[in-house]
Image 1 (spheres, rainbow, N blue to C red):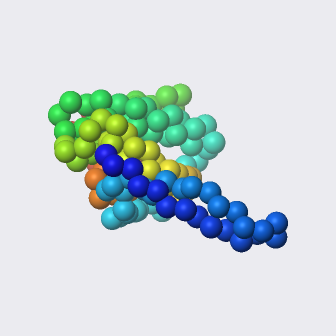
Image 2: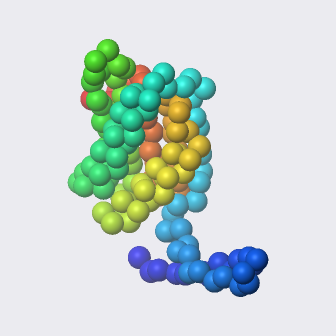
Image 3: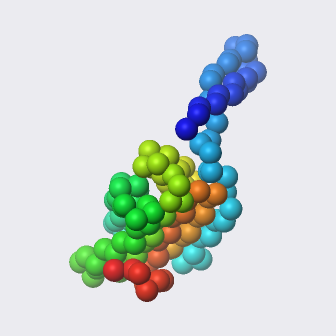
Length: 139
């Protein structure tokens, strides 16, 4: 993947500040973002979702068949099941898939942090989690 850079120029009280900023990787433009209206009940459940998404991020680029990964975490201490799906375009390399998934996660985390479900689709990857089984492929 070819890297391209842009320069962000900010005027501050101290003067001119110039910092190189990486342009988003190819295929990370947002197509869809949906946050469930329901909120997670506890901080423990929120942290469980974060840990689940980190595992989904780690595993999806390593899945051989088109970087397509369905996951399920069973209930823990009377908490709900968590279902998730991470997917990258089959044409992406493992590193590009990982980069795209990280951008998806960062955008999702900024907007849907406390929600019981969310789905973000970028041009080349997507990430989703719910507290219910949303596809036949969910384990």
